[in-house]
Amino acid sequence: MTVLAVIGVLALLIFVHELGHFMAARLQGIHVNRFSIGFGPILWKFQGPQTEYALRAIPLGGFVGFPDEDPESAIPANDPDLLSNRPVLDRAIVISAGVIANMIFAYLVFVVQFGSIGVPDAFVLKPGVFIPEVLPDTPASVAGVKAGDVIVAANNERLSDRETVQNDLIKIIQASRTNPVDLTIQRFDQEIDISVTPEINPEGNAVIGVKLIPNGSVTYRRPTGPVEVLTEAAREFQEKTQLVANGMFALLTNFSSMADQVGSPVKIVEQGAGLAKTDGRSLFPFAAIISINLAIINILPLPALDGGQLAFLLIEALRGKPLPTRLQESVMQTGIFLLLGLGVFLIIRDTTQLEVLQNLRQ
Image: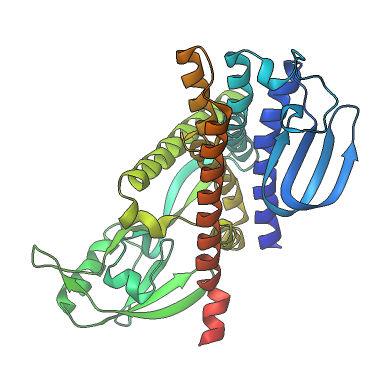
């Protein structure tokens, strides 16, 4: 059920994104002839007065179709309510509406979370050390340690729940020097034994290549009222948006070393299912963060993304006329080809790395 819940969350985020485009067009009186969730063969469809609504077999995206792109459309090419005949500003609103919808949705997720579960009250320490990040090409990553793991024991010594517990673990690692350190890792609801051989850094210290913070969980209390819910939701939304933006900037400026941090829908579902299995409340921040990710990725000025289309509109506004249609189509088709290629590669990579498949090999 956790996997289905995560897939449902992803489908909802896609629906919200496409609904943003759809509503921005319809509210401006722009013709829309298709609203589809997913790609590939149609599983279900309904023909409305103006728009065909469809659910397709491959739930990895969606699209809003306009008569401008349909050669069989009976609407005259000079109709003022065709998207291509609208001013640049009207088209920019339609294109950017999906991103705006995802950002609004992320904020509303936090509002629902704090309104139903409560607002954060205190951080309760638990035994062990939490790993928020594993650096690539380090002893820990080679040994199979993953971000989100909790180290609960090192060399058969159970770790405490003190605030300084990460210092205790660092002392054990440094004392081992280049000898293997036997770590007991808690991953979701199971414990895994992993042996990691430290390396010596330029400062002469033994390291394994992970970031460490105390392990624990947040407790919640009932909000004092709607104002506190809205305020806390805004604070959390701002914090998570900044976190995602910083991560995206680091990825774009140092892609070679951050490439293993990029995940396909397979990896997203696996991680989300793990979070949901551990604590169902985690689906709230998971949905919000993925929604923010979807918004920021789509606003990047890359071909085949909303940001790429906005870049074309900006050029059109500056030139006073659009770029040649064939040039735009060539750029967009190249972008689609590259994105599909990257997507297939990531799906294959992440599928082969699934815990279930790894267990079958053992």
